[in-house]
Length: 134
Image (cartoon, rainbow, N blue to C red):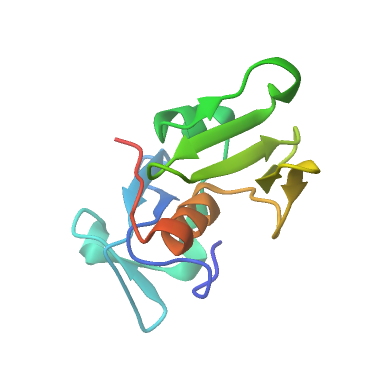
């Protein structure tokens, strides 16, 4: 189950279809306790039937994050403009947003990310752009 306050339009989530297959879809709307998408049964599902996608390193690569080399091999970076990048550290059980500081190296900030929609929301908050897995 996903909370209504956690999800926003454009997020990727999943539900069990009629064949009990995990089916990923993009949120097209949120209204009155339902998540809307034109491909869903009756075009909507209640929040209790919608689930977050567990964030994996493959998702970061699909979003065009690049893995750092050497001692920082567990850091993934996405350069979103000429000067700035978003960095995420793979802690094994979750992904921690980090910022680079010249004096301290990579410094953690915010809450760890466990789901794809959390990464999408962080990315949108920083860049005002959406990222999707195609």
